[in-house]
Image 1 (cartoon, one colour):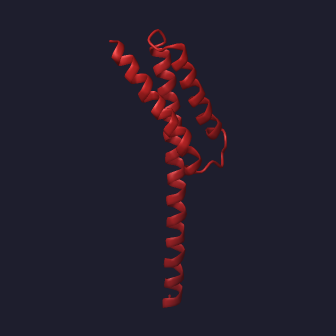
Image 2 (cartoon, rainbow, N blue to C red):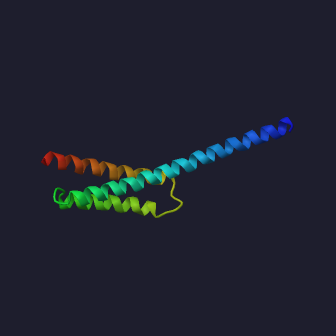
Image 3 (cartoon, rainbow, N blue to C red):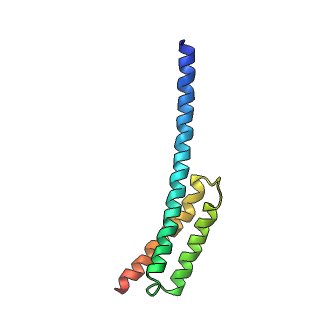
Length: 102
């Protein structure tokens, strides 16, 4: 194997690595979004009597937004960012209200 072939293989490997990192980031974002939905649904199911109707609606809306992105097989990491963050923010807000009641 001459040096040109080695250089070509190294370049191809580097390109693949970048592609793989992008795919991993997309899969991680999808998994995080899916986990956030499960967390929110569990919180609502386990604490239905402690969450106001207004907060239930807030969480349901945020869950719906994330599920819309989850329904897109070609959704990128960036597509998940805003709805996932909004859901996590809503979860924190509702959680704080719940624990303030105790």
